[in-house]
Image (tube, rainbow, N blue to C red; front, side, top):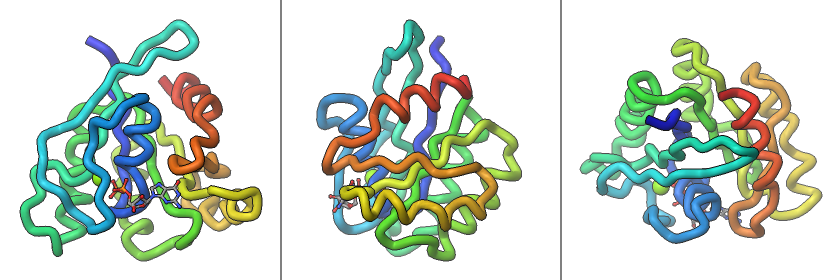
Amino acid sequence: SLPIVAIVGRPNVGKSSLFNWLAGRRISIVDPTAGVTRDRVSTVVEHGGRAWELMDTGGIGIVDVDDLSADVERQIQIAIDQAAVVVFVVDVREGIVPLDEDVSARLRAIKKPVVLVANKADTDKLAQQGGEFCKFGYGEPLCVSADQKLGKDELFDAIFEKL
Ligand code: GDP
Ligand code: MG
């Protein structure tokens, strides 16, 4: 079976938007309110002669929309059990919030390769604000915009290198 690349991050950073864009079709539910109950969502991606299964782990099986940390815990568990590579998504417009710190710490502990992605970098100016996420220790974030469809090739290259 194909290696699994798990998209992980706190609610509302744009994981499902990113997933739908990278999948090239609308599979995952994008919701401005955090926490959406549904089954696991994945799609096969082919890049550079290799293939992997990209998975949107956010909101899976979450019933209590107010319990954001339960969503994150669930995502981390999926990453532990199944992921070859983790795509850790943050929101460059909002910057670091405490739940991002939690996700970062949990991912560090599971010791799987991480690609740090700063989404919502809709403009050059926003893309220059990614530096603050360096403190997580995953290097410079890759700035992308699911909205503006910016950074797909760079992201696929970065995943490819960690597989
Ligand atoms: P998730 O909870 O991490 O899956 O986030 P969603 O994909 O549901 O997106 C949450 C909100 O962020 C929605 O209102 C999206 O339209 C918005 N969003 C997602 N990606 C981008 C982006 O690249 N730029 C901007 N400006 N908004 C985005
Ligand atoms: Mg989502």
